[in-house]
Length: 455
Ligand SMILES: Nc1ncnc2c1ncn2[C@@H]1O[C@H](COP(=O)(O)OP(=O)(O)OP(=O)(O)O)[C@@H](O)[C@H]1O
Ligand SMILES: [Mg+2]
Figure 1 (cartoon, helix red, strand yellow):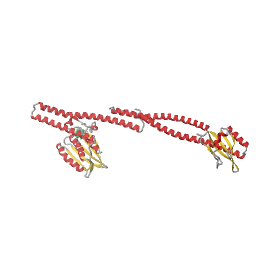
Figure 2 (cartoon, rainbow, N blue to C red):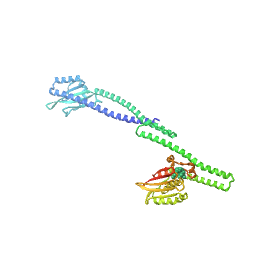
Figure 3 (cartoon, rainbow, N blue to C red):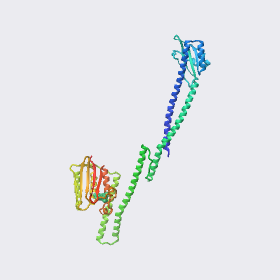
Figure 4 (cartoon, protein in one colour):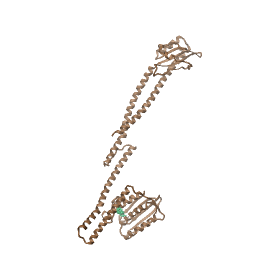
């Protein structure tokens, strides 16, 4: 369960540890080098100052004096003639024999380094020339025991090891906090998602930071609430379907039973058979609409937009539907400015308008006026279907696009409604990227407005 934090921790640690080691290595090398350089420089300066005195008086007294001075300090001096024959030495000269052998030619005035390998040799050393009237008369060799350099470097190493440990410990502490800060919310989210997968949608994640982790937590909460909504809606939908299917089936079964068991006069038989046919039609309509909706849900249907001349389109609709309106003693009037072109799927647009006009016809009384009207404003094309029928109560308005929602269940049943018409309309409108609005007043009328983008 904590695998991620361990992985993160190890990764951070390796990166930081690698960086620290790299930096320490360079720092260590740099410090040691400059320290040895400093030692050599001061050794050479000391040799040069001896040389200055010896150039003034190159005699035994002064040579002894210089050697005496050096024997008191932690450096050593060897003074030779120009052929490197030892004239005096602050320590037994045999110790330094190896260094005196090295050839000295074209020695610069300020001398040079004879030995600088502090880590291999017991001494580091420099040499300075003693000149008189431009001619070499002797040499001042200076020596320093490398033990002091070694002890200095040992102390330096101790410091490095100590600070190395401190940074390792600090890194560990930082890593623990950091990986907890990242992995803890992740673990919480993982728990939340497994809760969701078990069907518990009421997950609440602690408010974390304003970063990607916070966004992820918010998305998970949103996902849970959407899933919750969908599950509820599905359950409701299934309950409604079974109810809707059961009602006509009950009628069919009931009347079929009566016809089967009883001797009925022919008139009554005809009446019952008519009911059975009606209910069977209802059932087949219902199933057809359900299939249609399921198809839209899966987005497996395609909208094939084409330019449609709305004026012509309205005329055809008027022709098709007018007889039905006239039969109900109603009037359908369609208005559309000429040359108004809309880009839509003509079959689907027809389906939308048929459903809306069918509602106007079903839910209005004799003598009602129904208008179908279109116009363009800016880039938008508006189409309205308006009737002066019975209207929809305010409390029902927000729900009329829900599946199986009917305002007056018992009355609409006699009118043959399944409550799926507007749900289908809404899906089709949305598939066009358009919008549908509704305004209605009870006993005054209803207006549906479709808003299509002009492009
Ligand atoms: N123009 C309208 N006037 C008054 N009420 C309406 C109007 N249009 C819709 N309604 C109300 O909204 C409800 C839902 O309409 P919808 O078209 O979805 O279902 P339906 O007409 O009952 O059934 P279907 O259209 O599936 O045959 C209707 O039952 C009706 O109560
Ligand atoms: Mg309808």
